Length: 310
Length: 234
Image (spheres, chains in turn blue, cyan):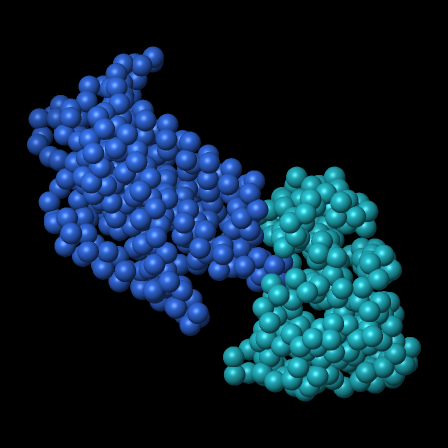
């Protein structure tokens, strides 16, 4: 039970990173970006590519990775952000200038997602890949908690990143401008805020989160060209559940979905094993997310922390 | 000296024109009222002046320079501030953050300006950390005007600032508008349907069906029987 909970918290922390990026985009850019999952995949594969280019700098004590991974993540963030800004310039900016609806923007993002996935498939092929094939032994911590060293680092980094973004949105001038645009675009413009600048920063922050979350998912699970597309379901559920545009909602939704998926499928799997029934319950994880979102939407149509916008 | 001179302005939404051939002028230090029935185009006129809506034809001279088709950011940077009737605050931001965003274009320390607007609206001072969305209707209106003052505008566009306020708050808000004009020495363009607000102004325009029907001093406008009967209920 504790193992499942810990596994859920780690999975939830990765969902939270992506959900914050997606909720910022959905709120400020005013459309659901279906390509976000594939930017997540792109980030993970860029890290893999940079690890391949960089010299072997060894691994950190107890961890499956070393300095080459740290440098690769930083480079991957840069490349992912640049590619996202390029796609914005190529497609989304033009559509915004034409004044198309949110629905049309979302459909366009679906097209962009196919393009990115196809490019990843062409470059890296369809097979599953790993950053490291080293088998890690879990460490025993107080209260019977067992975690792998990689998982501890993922959790710590996700925590630092979430609170850095929160600090940025709360304390910096651009962060306040982003929140103002999210509240009222016209009044923000009339206050002197340049919406184009805010949109650019939204892509940058979302890109950083996509690249880091993708890489963390790759460390924790594996890399495949469809990883981001499959990850979209928990991401969207986390955003909708927490309330579109809500930072704390994304955190709450991400952690809830992560923990619920691991706990519920894990407990059912354990029960089936005890009853000697052979079944792979983990493939039904998305079903847990769907059940959650249906219940939340019936009870709180704007999400747990979301508000109706005028 | 005209701070604003609008010449034969035509504008609207998409293909639908809402104001036609509108000409208005304001001098520095003047309070001008724009009155008219609902849907006459009063708010549209302010949106065009603020750069929110691009006009179809005509010209807008602000401080002697044409600003036709300029962006809202540009208009704010030149010294024009617009306070809309509705959705005039950032509800998820605190009162302090609303004021800071109001002076977004400034790079200087804002504490002096925040103190200044708090002298005009002392009620805001004790609510600085409160979320704007949790304020009462009157407090929201005060915050909206205070946000509009943060840039020390030369021209303040107020769209029905007393709309939805209790009668005691209406008088308080009108006194504040008068105080603002005296303190800052700027010009105020006031869209209103309240008789007391019209009395506050030096001159007034009556707009109906998107066109200016009357332009006169406040006294003349208020003694005009047709204006009184039609727009102030006699």
